[in-house]
Length: 129
Image (cartoon, rainbow, N blue to C red; front, side, top):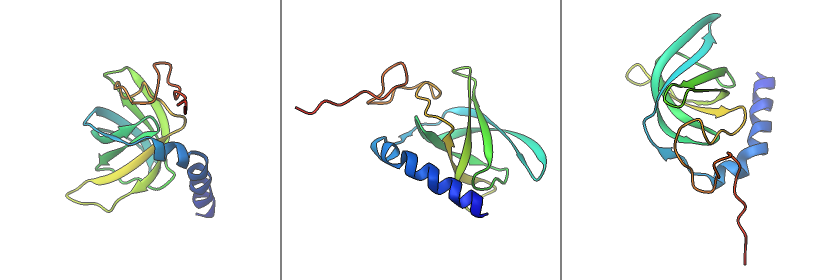
């Protein structure tokens, strides 16, 4: 438990400034989520609620926990990314809202354009006059 809390705190410090600079885009993109829970593998088709280059917000029926590793497959872009669960809401109507953070930012994964990012997936520098 302490290791999980420490892991999340360190990840938050590393990218919190970048995440605050990039708002999520509300869009429903079909994805396949894979992981292991209670020593059993799972796969669940779902869709995003909101996304950015750092991860996204999804709804799942399977129970997941904070810091749980998962992978997300976007068949539309033929891309798969790994990440961790960073937020889990209590179940409502058989589903849980969760936030996921990618292992590394991936501007190309969702198949949409994010302001402030170039096509190579790197943040563009903003020049102040």
